[in-house]
Image 1 (cartoon, one colour):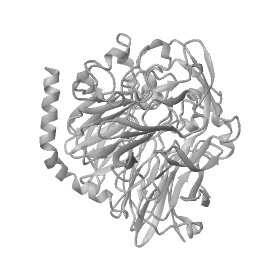
Image 2 (cartoon, one colour; image 1 turned 30 degrees about the horizontal axis):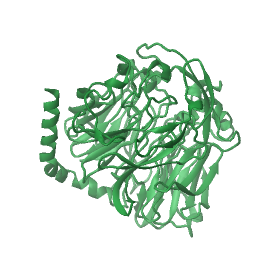
Image 3 (cartoon, one colour; image 1 turned 180 degrees about the horizontal axis):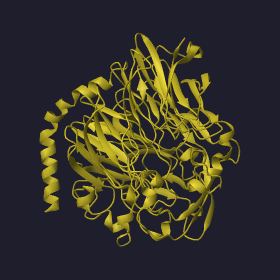
Image 4 (cartoon, helix red, strand yellow; image 1 turned 90 degrees about the vertical axis):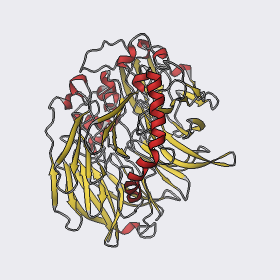
Length: 594
Protein backbone atom coordinates (compact mmCIF):
# COMPACT_ATOMS: atom_id res chain seq x y z
CA UNK A 1 0.00 0.00 0.00
CA UNK A 2 2.82 2.41 0.91
CA UNK A 3 4.56 1.68 -2.40
CA UNK A 4 1.33 2.38 -4.30
CA UNK A 5 1.02 5.77 -2.57
CA UNK A 6 4.61 6.65 -3.50
CA UNK A 7 4.02 5.71 -7.15
CA UNK A 8 0.80 7.75 -7.22
CA UNK A 9 2.66 10.73 -5.80
CA UNK A 10 5.31 10.45 -8.51
CA UNK A 11 2.68 10.39 -11.27
CA UNK A 12 0.79 13.33 -9.75
CA UNK A 13 4.00 15.38 -9.44
CA UNK A 14 4.90 14.78 -13.08
CA UNK A 15 1.47 16.01 -14.18
CA UNK A 16 1.66 19.14 -12.01
CA UNK A 17 5.19 20.32 -12.93
CA UNK A 18 4.21 22.75 -15.78
CA UNK A 19 1.51 24.43 -13.65
CA UNK A 20 3.60 24.81 -10.52
CA UNK A 21 6.71 25.87 -12.42
CA UNK A 22 4.89 28.84 -13.95
CA UNK A 23 4.01 30.08 -10.45
CA UNK A 24 7.68 29.99 -9.52
CA UNK A 25 9.01 31.96 -12.49
CA UNK A 26 8.94 35.35 -10.73
CA UNK A 27 11.34 34.24 -7.99
CA UNK A 28 13.65 32.51 -10.45
CA UNK A 29 13.71 35.56 -12.73
CA UNK A 30 14.35 38.01 -9.89
CA UNK A 31 17.20 35.87 -8.58
CA UNK A 32 19.00 36.39 -11.92
CA UNK A 33 18.97 40.19 -11.50
CA UNK A 34 22.51 41.10 -10.34
CA UNK A 35 21.26 44.37 -8.81
CA UNK A 36 19.52 42.32 -6.11
CA UNK A 37 20.46 39.33 -3.94
CA UNK A 38 17.15 37.56 -3.57
CA UNK A 39 18.10 33.98 -2.59
CA UNK A 40 20.40 33.02 0.31
CA UNK A 41 23.00 31.46 -2.01
CA UNK A 42 22.36 34.06 -4.71
CA UNK A 43 20.72 31.59 -7.11
CA UNK A 44 18.99 28.23 -7.08
CA UNK A 45 22.22 26.73 -8.43
CA UNK A 46 24.16 28.05 -5.44
CA UNK A 47 27.15 29.32 -7.44
CA UNK A 48 27.40 32.54 -5.38
CA UNK A 49 28.62 34.46 -8.43
CA UNK A 50 27.46 37.95 -9.45
CA UNK A 51 27.52 39.54 -12.89
CA UNK A 52 28.38 42.90 -11.34
CA UNK A 53 31.77 44.18 -12.49
CA UNK A 54 32.25 47.70 -11.14
CA UNK A 55 34.79 46.47 -8.58
CA UNK A 56 37.86 45.06 -10.31
CA UNK A 57 41.48 44.15 -9.50
CA UNK A 58 42.43 47.59 -10.81
CA UNK A 59 40.29 49.55 -8.32
CA UNK A 60 39.59 47.17 -5.41
CA UNK A 61 42.22 48.93 -3.30
CA UNK A 62 39.84 51.91 -3.22
CA UNK A 63 37.14 50.01 -1.34
CA UNK A 64 35.88 51.74 1.79
CA UNK A 65 33.19 51.12 4.41
CA UNK A 66 30.03 52.83 3.16
CA UNK A 67 27.84 52.15 6.21
CA UNK A 68 27.42 49.79 9.16
CA UNK A 69 24.70 48.56 11.49
CA UNK A 70 24.69 46.60 14.74
CA UNK A 71 22.86 43.27 14.78
CA UNK A 72 22.02 43.71 18.46
CA UNK A 73 23.52 40.30 19.35
CA UNK A 74 26.96 38.97 20.24
CA UNK A 75 26.92 35.32 19.12
CA UNK A 76 28.10 33.97 15.76
CA UNK A 77 26.70 35.79 12.72
CA UNK A 78 26.58 32.97 10.15
CA UNK A 79 24.22 34.14 7.41
CA UNK A 80 23.96 36.91 4.83
CA UNK A 81 21.58 39.75 3.95
CA UNK A 82 19.03 39.64 1.14
CA UNK A 83 18.44 42.63 -1.14
CA UNK A 84 14.95 42.81 -2.65
CA UNK A 85 14.25 46.01 -4.56
CA UNK A 86 15.14 48.92 -2.29
CA UNK A 87 15.03 46.81 0.88
CA UNK A 88 17.67 44.79 2.75
CA UNK A 89 16.62 41.97 5.08
CA UNK A 90 18.84 40.02 7.47
CA UNK A 91 18.65 37.87 10.60
CA UNK A 92 20.95 37.93 13.62
CA UNK A 93 22.13 35.12 15.83
CA UNK A 94 19.91 34.13 18.77
CA UNK A 95 17.47 35.55 19.74
CA UNK A 96 17.10 35.79 15.96
CA UNK A 97 16.21 39.43 15.37
CA UNK A 98 15.06 40.06 11.78
CA UNK A 99 15.58 43.51 10.26
CA UNK A 100 14.18 45.33 7.24
CA UNK A 101 16.37 48.28 6.21
CA UNK A 102 15.49 50.94 3.64
CA UNK A 103 18.43 51.24 1.20
CA UNK A 104 17.10 54.61 0.00
CA UNK A 105 17.40 55.95 3.53
CA UNK A 106 20.24 54.01 5.13
CA UNK A 107 19.89 53.98 8.88
CA UNK A 108 16.12 53.63 8.80
CA UNK A 109 14.96 50.29 10.21
CA UNK A 110 11.56 49.88 8.56
CA UNK A 111 10.67 47.02 10.90
CA UNK A 112 12.25 44.62 13.36
CA UNK A 113 10.91 41.19 14.26
CA UNK A 114 11.90 39.81 17.69
CA UNK A 115 10.30 36.39 18.11
CA UNK A 116 9.39 34.94 21.48
CA UNK A 117 11.42 31.76 21.92
CA UNK A 118 11.66 28.67 24.08
CA UNK A 119 14.41 29.66 26.52
CA UNK A 120 15.54 26.03 26.71
CA UNK A 121 16.72 25.95 23.08
CA UNK A 122 20.16 27.59 23.63
CA UNK A 123 21.11 24.80 26.04
CA UNK A 124 20.81 22.16 23.31
CA UNK A 125 22.49 24.09 20.47
CA UNK A 126 25.64 22.07 19.87
CA UNK A 127 27.77 24.66 18.07
CA UNK A 128 26.75 28.21 18.99
CA UNK A 129 23.50 30.14 18.63
CA UNK A 130 23.83 30.85 14.91
CA UNK A 131 21.46 31.27 11.96
CA UNK A 132 22.09 31.09 8.21
CA UNK A 133 19.65 33.84 7.21
CA UNK A 134 16.21 34.55 5.81
CA UNK A 135 14.56 33.77 2.49
CA UNK A 136 12.08 35.73 0.38
CA UNK A 137 9.12 34.76 -1.83
CA UNK A 138 5.66 36.04 -2.74
CA UNK A 139 5.97 39.19 -0.62
CA UNK A 140 7.02 37.20 2.44
CA UNK A 141 10.22 36.93 4.47
CA UNK A 142 10.71 33.32 5.61
CA UNK A 143 12.47 32.89 8.95
CA UNK A 144 13.70 29.99 11.10
CA UNK A 145 14.46 30.36 14.80
CA UNK A 146 16.64 28.37 17.17
CA UNK A 147 13.61 26.91 18.98
CA UNK A 148 12.48 25.24 15.69
CA UNK A 149 9.80 27.68 14.58
CA UNK A 150 9.26 28.72 10.97
CA UNK A 151 7.72 32.16 10.38
CA UNK A 152 6.34 33.85 7.29
CA UNK A 153 6.47 37.63 7.71
CA UNK A 154 4.88 40.29 5.54
CA UNK A 155 7.89 41.84 3.77
CA UNK A 156 6.41 45.34 4.01
CA UNK A 157 5.32 45.34 7.65
CA UNK A 158 7.05 42.45 9.40
CA UNK A 159 3.73 41.13 10.67
CA UNK A 160 3.42 37.36 11.08
CA UNK A 161 1.40 35.78 8.25
CA UNK A 162 1.77 32.26 9.69
CA UNK A 163 4.05 30.18 11.88
CA UNK A 164 4.80 26.49 12.22
CA UNK A 165 6.73 24.40 14.72
CA UNK A 166 9.22 22.09 13.03
CA UNK A 167 10.69 20.33 16.08
CA UNK A 168 11.04 20.17 19.84
CA UNK A 169 14.02 21.63 21.75
CA UNK A 170 13.22 19.33 24.69
CA UNK A 171 14.38 16.47 22.44
CA UNK A 172 17.56 18.32 21.45
CA UNK A 173 16.14 19.69 18.20
CA UNK A 174 17.10 23.17 17.00
CA UNK A 175 17.09 25.10 13.71
CA UNK A 176 19.83 27.23 12.18
CA UNK A 177 19.20 26.87 8.43
CA UNK A 178 18.01 29.30 5.77
CA UNK A 179 14.76 28.09 4.15
CA UNK A 180 14.58 27.34 0.43
CA UNK A 181 11.37 28.29 -1.36
CA UNK A 182 10.48 26.17 -4.41
CA UNK A 183 7.10 26.54 -6.14
CA UNK A 184 4.62 26.92 -3.25
CA UNK A 185 6.76 25.06 -0.72
CA UNK A 186 8.97 26.39 2.09
CA UNK A 187 11.63 23.72 2.59
CA UNK A 188 13.50 23.50 5.90
CA UNK A 189 15.64 21.03 7.86
CA UNK A 190 16.52 20.28 11.47
CA UNK A 191 19.63 20.32 13.69
CA UNK A 192 20.57 18.16 16.66
CA UNK A 193 22.71 15.26 15.43
CA UNK A 194 24.73 15.37 18.66
CA UNK A 195 21.52 14.78 20.65
CA UNK A 196 20.35 11.64 18.88
CA UNK A 197 17.94 13.59 16.66
CA UNK A 198 16.74 11.75 13.55
CA UNK A 199 17.12 14.21 10.67
CA UNK A 200 14.38 15.24 8.28
CA UNK A 201 13.59 17.65 5.46
CA UNK A 202 10.12 19.21 5.64
CA UNK A 203 8.00 21.27 3.24
CA UNK A 204 5.38 23.80 4.37
CA UNK A 205 2.78 25.50 2.19
CA UNK A 206 3.98 29.02 1.36
CA UNK A 207 0.52 30.58 1.74
CA UNK A 208 -0.83 28.78 4.81
CA UNK A 209 2.12 27.23 6.68
CA UNK A 210 0.48 23.80 6.61
CA UNK A 211 2.94 20.91 6.56
CA UNK A 212 2.86 19.19 3.15
CA UNK A 213 5.49 16.44 3.47
CA UNK A 214 8.38 15.28 5.63
CA UNK A 215 11.25 13.05 4.52
CA UNK A 216 13.44 11.50 7.21
CA UNK A 217 17.09 10.72 6.46
CA UNK A 218 17.07 7.24 8.01
CA UNK A 219 14.43 4.63 8.76
CA UNK A 220 11.64 2.80 6.89
CA UNK A 221 11.01 3.53 3.21
CA UNK A 222 7.70 5.21 4.05
CA UNK A 223 9.49 7.61 6.44
CA UNK A 224 12.37 8.50 4.13
CA UNK A 225 10.04 8.73 1.08
CA UNK A 226 11.95 6.19 -1.00
CA UNK A 227 10.36 4.21 -3.81
CA UNK A 228 12.41 0.99 -3.52
CA UNK A 229 11.97 0.26 -7.24
CA UNK A 230 12.69 3.77 -8.56
CA UNK A 231 14.89 5.66 -6.10
CA UNK A 232 18.46 5.18 -7.35
CA UNK A 233 21.51 4.40 -5.24
CA UNK A 234 24.05 6.81 -6.74
CA UNK A 235 26.95 4.48 -5.99
CA UNK A 236 25.56 1.34 -7.65
CA UNK A 237 23.24 3.09 -10.15
CA UNK A 238 20.59 0.53 -9.24
CA UNK A 239 17.30 0.91 -7.35
CA UNK A 240 17.90 1.06 -3.60
CA UNK A 241 15.55 -1.88 -2.94
CA UNK A 242 13.31 -2.50 0.04
CA UNK A 243 14.42 -1.30 3.50
CA UNK A 244 17.73 0.11 2.20
CA UNK A 245 18.23 2.12 5.39
CA UNK A 246 16.92 -0.35 7.98
CA UNK A 247 19.22 -3.11 6.75
CA UNK A 248 22.29 -1.03 7.61
CA UNK A 249 21.48 -0.35 11.27
CA UNK A 250 21.65 -2.62 14.30
CA UNK A 251 18.07 -3.27 15.46
CA UNK A 252 16.40 0.09 16.32
CA UNK A 253 19.59 2.19 16.45
CA UNK A 254 18.26 4.15 13.44
CA UNK A 255 15.72 5.83 15.71
CA UNK A 256 18.67 7.80 17.16
CA UNK A 257 20.38 7.81 13.80
CA UNK A 258 21.26 11.44 13.20
CA UNK A 259 21.45 12.46 9.55
CA UNK A 260 20.29 15.98 10.40
CA UNK A 261 19.81 18.54 7.64
CA UNK A 262 21.24 21.84 8.85
CA UNK A 263 23.16 22.87 5.73
CA UNK A 264 22.34 24.50 2.40
CA UNK A 265 19.84 23.45 -0.29
CA UNK A 266 19.92 24.00 -4.06
CA UNK A 267 17.40 23.37 -6.83
CA UNK A 268 17.36 22.50 -10.55
CA UNK A 269 14.16 23.87 -12.19
CA UNK A 270 14.66 21.77 -15.34
CA UNK A 271 14.90 18.48 -13.46
CA UNK A 272 12.59 19.71 -10.67
CA UNK A 273 14.91 18.33 -8.00
CA UNK A 274 16.08 19.76 -4.68
CA UNK A 275 19.59 18.78 -3.55
CA UNK A 276 20.88 18.65 0.02
CA UNK A 277 23.05 16.58 2.35
CA UNK A 278 22.49 14.76 5.62
CA UNK A 279 24.71 14.86 8.68
CA UNK A 280 26.63 12.36 10.77
CA UNK A 281 25.01 9.25 12.25
CA UNK A 282 24.43 9.04 16.01
CA UNK A 283 26.48 8.36 18.07
CA UNK A 284 30.04 9.44 17.28
CA UNK A 285 31.09 6.01 18.60
CA UNK A 286 31.03 3.80 15.48
CA UNK A 287 31.35 0.59 17.50
CA UNK A 288 27.79 1.10 18.80
CA UNK A 289 26.27 1.23 15.31
CA UNK A 290 27.76 -1.43 12.98
CA UNK A 291 26.86 -1.17 9.29
CA UNK A 292 26.81 1.57 6.65
CA UNK A 293 24.17 3.55 8.62
CA UNK A 294 22.32 4.65 5.50
CA UNK A 295 21.29 7.33 4.73
CA UNK A 296 23.41 9.49 6.99
CA UNK A 297 26.29 11.48 5.37
CA UNK A 298 24.34 11.31 2.11
CA UNK A 299 23.50 13.58 -0.81
CA UNK A 300 19.80 13.46 -1.71
CA UNK A 301 17.84 14.58 -4.76
CA UNK A 302 14.12 14.99 -4.06
CA UNK A 303 11.00 16.16 -5.85
CA UNK A 304 10.07 19.42 -4.06
CA UNK A 305 6.36 18.87 -4.59
CA UNK A 306 6.12 15.40 -3.04
CA UNK A 307 9.42 14.89 -1.18
CA UNK A 308 9.97 11.56 -2.95
CA UNK A 309 13.68 10.84 -3.51
CA UNK A 310 14.96 10.45 -7.06
CA UNK A 311 18.38 9.27 -5.88
CA UNK A 312 20.71 9.14 -2.88
CA UNK A 313 24.50 8.85 -2.72
CA UNK A 314 26.25 8.06 0.57
CA UNK A 315 29.72 9.64 0.78
CA UNK A 316 31.00 8.27 4.10
CA UNK A 317 29.45 4.87 4.92
CA UNK A 318 29.68 3.99 8.62
CA UNK A 319 31.00 7.47 9.40
CA UNK A 320 33.58 7.06 12.18
CA UNK A 321 34.91 10.64 12.16
CA UNK A 322 31.85 12.98 12.31
CA UNK A 323 32.09 13.91 8.64
CA UNK A 324 28.66 15.53 8.21
CA UNK A 325 27.53 15.67 4.59
CA UNK A 326 25.48 18.86 4.93
CA UNK A 327 27.66 21.16 2.79
CA UNK A 328 26.10 22.81 -0.24
CA UNK A 329 25.74 21.14 -3.65
CA UNK A 330 26.71 23.61 -6.40
CA UNK A 331 24.95 23.04 -9.72
CA UNK A 332 27.00 23.59 -12.88
CA UNK A 333 27.68 21.92 -16.22
CA UNK A 334 30.92 19.94 -16.57
CA UNK A 335 32.85 18.49 -19.49
CA UNK A 336 32.96 14.72 -18.98
CA UNK A 337 34.50 12.45 -21.65
CA UNK A 338 33.88 15.05 -24.33
CA UNK A 339 30.25 15.65 -23.38
CA UNK A 340 28.62 18.39 -21.31
CA UNK A 341 26.91 16.90 -18.27
CA UNK A 342 24.65 18.62 -15.71
CA UNK A 343 26.63 18.09 -12.53
CA UNK A 344 26.54 18.71 -8.81
CA UNK A 345 29.79 19.59 -7.02
CA UNK A 346 30.06 19.05 -3.28
CA UNK A 347 33.09 19.87 -1.13
CA UNK A 348 32.56 17.48 1.75
CA UNK A 349 33.73 17.65 5.33
CA UNK A 350 35.69 14.45 4.66
CA UNK A 351 38.20 16.29 2.43
CA UNK A 352 37.00 15.07 -0.98
CA UNK A 353 35.34 17.19 -3.67
CA UNK A 354 32.63 15.08 -5.33
CA UNK A 355 31.31 15.71 -8.83
CA UNK A 356 28.07 13.83 -9.57
CA UNK A 357 25.72 13.66 -12.52
CA UNK A 358 22.80 15.41 -10.87
CA UNK A 359 20.26 13.53 -12.98
CA UNK A 360 21.00 10.18 -11.34
CA UNK A 361 23.68 10.64 -8.66
CA UNK A 362 26.39 8.84 -10.64
CA UNK A 363 29.89 9.72 -9.44
CA UNK A 364 31.93 11.51 -12.12
CA UNK A 365 35.00 12.59 -10.13
CA UNK A 366 36.26 12.75 -6.55
CA UNK A 367 39.50 14.48 -5.55
CA UNK A 368 41.15 15.50 -2.28
CA UNK A 369 40.99 19.28 -1.98
CA UNK A 370 43.10 19.46 1.16
CA UNK A 371 46.48 17.73 0.87
CA UNK A 372 46.45 16.48 4.46
CA UNK A 373 43.39 14.21 3.95
CA UNK A 374 44.39 10.71 5.10
CA UNK A 375 41.34 8.83 6.50
CA UNK A 376 40.81 7.42 3.01
CA UNK A 377 43.25 7.02 0.13
CA UNK A 378 40.74 7.72 -2.65
CA UNK A 379 37.13 7.26 -3.72
CA UNK A 380 36.42 4.27 -5.97
CA UNK A 381 34.66 5.72 -9.02
CA UNK A 382 33.01 2.37 -9.83
CA UNK A 383 31.40 1.79 -6.44
CA UNK A 384 31.39 5.33 -5.07
CA UNK A 385 32.83 4.05 -1.80
CA UNK A 386 35.97 5.35 -0.07
CA UNK A 387 39.09 3.17 -0.02
CA UNK A 388 39.87 3.46 3.66
CA UNK A 389 43.16 3.91 5.46
CA UNK A 390 42.74 1.24 8.19
CA UNK A 391 45.11 3.01 10.56
CA UNK A 392 42.67 5.95 10.80
CA UNK A 393 39.51 3.95 11.55
CA UNK A 394 38.16 4.88 14.97
CA UNK A 395 36.67 2.41 17.45
CA UNK A 396 35.60 2.28 21.06
CA UNK A 397 38.37 2.47 23.66
CA UNK A 398 41.19 3.45 21.27
CA UNK A 399 42.69 6.92 20.86
CA UNK A 400 43.38 7.15 17.13
CA UNK A 401 45.85 9.92 16.36
CA UNK A 402 46.59 12.22 13.41
CA UNK A 403 43.34 11.76 11.50
CA UNK A 404 42.94 14.34 8.73
CA UNK A 405 40.73 16.21 8.34
CA UNK A 406 39.41 16.81 11.85
CA UNK A 407 35.71 16.45 12.64
CA UNK A 408 35.24 20.13 11.82
CA UNK A 409 36.04 19.10 8.27
CA UNK A 410 38.36 20.15 5.48
CA UNK A 411 35.43 22.43 4.71
CA UNK A 412 32.47 23.06 6.94
CA UNK A 413 29.14 24.70 6.05
CA UNK A 414 30.71 27.87 4.60
CA UNK A 415 29.52 27.92 0.95
CA UNK A 416 31.89 27.94 -2.02
CA UNK A 417 31.50 30.07 -5.14
CA UNK A 418 31.93 29.17 -8.81
CA UNK A 419 32.87 31.47 -11.68
CA UNK A 420 31.42 30.23 -15.01
CA UNK A 421 34.21 32.02 -16.91
CA UNK A 422 37.21 30.53 -15.11
CA UNK A 423 35.31 27.27 -14.40
CA UNK A 424 36.95 27.23 -10.99
CA UNK A 425 35.54 26.92 -7.49
CA UNK A 426 36.75 29.37 -4.86
CA UNK A 427 36.56 27.69 -1.48
CA UNK A 428 37.30 28.61 2.12
CA UNK A 429 38.78 25.47 3.67
CA UNK A 430 40.16 24.11 6.94
CA UNK A 431 43.65 22.61 7.22
CA UNK A 432 43.22 20.65 10.45
CA UNK A 433 43.61 17.16 11.96
CA UNK A 434 42.55 15.41 15.16
CA UNK A 435 42.93 12.67 17.74
CA UNK A 436 39.69 10.73 18.27
CA UNK A 437 38.80 8.39 21.13
CA UNK A 438 35.34 6.79 21.02
CA UNK A 439 33.53 5.54 24.11
CA UNK A 440 30.19 3.93 24.94
CA UNK A 441 27.30 6.33 25.54
CA UNK A 442 23.62 5.88 26.46
CA UNK A 443 20.78 7.93 25.03
CA UNK A 444 18.71 10.29 27.15
CA UNK A 445 16.30 12.69 25.47
CA UNK A 446 17.55 16.27 25.39
CA UNK A 447 21.09 15.35 26.50
CA UNK A 448 24.27 15.07 24.37
CA UNK A 449 24.63 11.73 22.59
CA UNK A 450 28.20 12.00 21.35
CA UNK A 451 30.46 9.22 22.63
CA UNK A 452 33.89 10.54 21.64
CA UNK A 453 36.67 12.72 23.02
CA UNK A 454 38.23 14.73 20.21
CA UNK A 455 41.26 17.00 20.12
CA UNK A 456 41.89 19.15 17.02
CA UNK A 457 45.06 20.90 15.86
CA UNK A 458 46.63 22.40 12.68
CA UNK A 459 47.37 19.79 10.00
CA UNK A 460 51.08 20.56 9.85
CA UNK A 461 51.35 21.41 13.57
CA UNK A 462 52.15 24.96 12.46
CA UNK A 463 50.33 28.27 12.13
CA UNK A 464 48.09 27.44 9.14
CA UNK A 465 44.56 26.30 9.94
CA UNK A 466 42.77 27.67 6.87
CA UNK A 467 43.29 27.96 3.12
CA UNK A 468 41.38 29.84 0.44
CA UNK A 469 41.75 27.80 -2.75
CA UNK A 470 40.92 28.15 -6.44
CA UNK A 471 40.06 24.58 -7.42
CA UNK A 472 39.18 22.62 -10.55
CA UNK A 473 36.77 19.98 -9.27
CA UNK A 474 36.92 17.83 -12.41
CA UNK A 475 40.71 17.53 -12.56
CA UNK A 476 41.48 18.02 -8.87
CA UNK A 477 44.00 20.78 -9.56
CA UNK A 478 44.49 23.61 -7.08
CA UNK A 479 45.32 26.71 -9.17
CA UNK A 480 46.37 28.83 -6.20
CA UNK A 481 45.97 28.98 -2.43
CA UNK A 482 46.14 31.59 0.33
CA UNK A 483 47.21 30.34 3.75
CA UNK A 484 45.43 31.81 6.78
CA UNK A 485 46.21 31.52 10.48
CA UNK A 486 42.76 30.27 11.46
CA UNK A 487 40.10 28.23 9.68
CA UNK A 488 38.50 29.97 6.69
CA UNK A 489 34.93 29.71 7.97
CA UNK A 490 33.50 32.39 5.68
CA UNK A 491 31.68 31.75 2.44
CA UNK A 492 33.13 33.16 -0.76
CA UNK A 493 31.70 35.48 -3.42
CA UNK A 494 32.95 35.89 -6.99
CA UNK A 495 32.00 38.55 -9.54
CA UNK A 496 32.36 39.36 -13.22
CA UNK A 497 34.88 41.95 -12.06
CA UNK A 498 37.27 39.00 -11.43
CA UNK A 499 37.33 39.62 -7.68
CA UNK A 500 36.65 37.04 -4.97
CA UNK A 501 35.55 38.24 -1.51
CA UNK A 502 35.81 36.35 1.77
CA UNK A 503 36.45 36.83 5.49
CA UNK A 504 38.69 35.23 8.09
CA UNK A 505 38.05 33.96 11.59
CA UNK A 506 40.29 36.66 13.04
CA UNK A 507 38.29 39.41 11.35
CA UNK A 508 39.93 40.30 8.03
CA UNK A 509 37.56 40.99 5.12
CA UNK A 510 39.50 40.51 1.89
CA UNK A 511 39.17 41.17 -1.84
CA UNK A 512 41.35 38.85 -3.93
CA UNK A 513 42.28 38.66 -7.61
CA UNK A 514 40.49 35.58 -8.98
CA UNK A 515 43.24 34.80 -11.45
CA UNK A 516 46.29 35.07 -9.22
CA UNK A 517 45.18 34.89 -5.58
CA UNK A 518 46.73 38.28 -4.87
CA UNK A 519 45.09 40.13 -1.98
CA UNK A 520 43.86 43.45 -3.39
CA UNK A 521 42.23 44.91 -0.29
CA UNK A 522 41.70 43.96 3.34
CA UNK A 523 39.87 45.55 6.25
CA UNK A 524 39.85 44.40 9.86
CA UNK A 525 36.22 44.20 10.98
CA UNK A 526 35.02 44.54 14.60
CA UNK A 527 34.81 40.75 15.05
CA UNK A 528 35.73 37.55 13.22
CA UNK A 529 33.81 36.54 10.09
CA UNK A 530 31.88 33.27 9.69
CA UNK A 531 29.25 34.70 7.33
CA UNK A 532 28.89 34.94 3.57
CA UNK A 533 29.43 38.17 1.58
CA UNK A 534 26.87 39.32 -0.97
CA UNK A 535 26.87 42.10 -3.57
CA UNK A 536 24.21 44.36 -5.06
CA UNK A 537 23.85 47.56 -7.11
CA UNK A 538 22.07 50.70 -5.89
CA UNK A 539 21.94 54.06 -7.70
CA UNK A 540 24.74 53.06 -10.05
CA UNK A 541 27.14 51.90 -7.32
CA UNK A 542 28.16 48.35 -6.50
CA UNK A 543 28.09 47.40 -2.80
CA UNK A 544 29.46 44.36 -0.98
CA UNK A 545 27.88 43.44 2.36
CA UNK A 546 29.06 41.03 5.04
CA UNK A 547 28.20 40.23 8.65
CA UNK A 548 30.97 40.39 11.24
CA UNK A 549 30.52 38.30 14.38
CA UNK A 550 32.79 35.45 15.41
CA UNK A 551 31.38 32.17 16.69
CA UNK A 552 30.05 28.89 15.36
CA UNK A 553 31.86 25.62 15.99
CA UNK A 554 35.08 27.15 14.68
CA UNK A 555 35.16 29.67 17.54
CA UNK A 556 33.00 27.94 20.12
CA UNK A 557 35.65 28.48 22.80
CA UNK A 558 35.46 32.23 22.41
CA UNK A 559 31.66 32.19 22.07
CA UNK A 560 31.06 30.04 25.16
CA UNK A 561 34.05 31.04 27.29
CA UNK A 562 35.50 27.50 27.15
CA UNK A 563 39.18 26.86 27.86
CA UNK A 564 39.82 23.10 27.99
CA UNK A 565 41.21 21.87 24.67
CA UNK A 566 38.77 18.97 24.23
CA UNK A 567 35.70 21.08 25.09
CA UNK A 568 33.36 22.30 22.37
CA UNK A 569 33.42 18.84 20.76
CA UNK A 570 37.20 19.08 20.48
CA UNK A 571 37.42 22.53 18.89
CA UNK A 572 38.60 24.72 21.76
CA UNK A 573 42.28 23.81 21.65
CA UNK A 574 42.42 24.50 17.92
CA UNK A 575 41.65 28.21 18.30
CA UNK A 576 42.89 28.90 21.81
CA UNK A 577 44.83 31.98 20.64
CA UNK A 578 41.90 33.48 18.69
CA UNK A 579 41.05 35.81 21.59
CA UNK A 580 44.36 37.58 20.96
CA UNK A 581 43.02 38.77 17.59
CA UNK A 582 39.28 39.31 17.87
CA UNK A 583 36.29 39.41 20.20
CA UNK A 584 32.57 38.70 20.11
CA UNK A 585 30.43 41.15 18.17
CA UNK A 586 27.61 41.62 15.70
CA UNK A 587 27.90 44.17 12.89
CA UNK A 588 26.67 44.43 9.32
CA UNK A 589 29.31 46.14 7.16
CA UNK A 590 28.66 47.44 3.64
CA UNK A 591 31.58 48.34 1.36
CA UNK A 592 31.79 50.34 -1.89
CA UNK A 593 34.38 52.17 -3.96
CA UNK A 594 35.25 55.61 -2.61
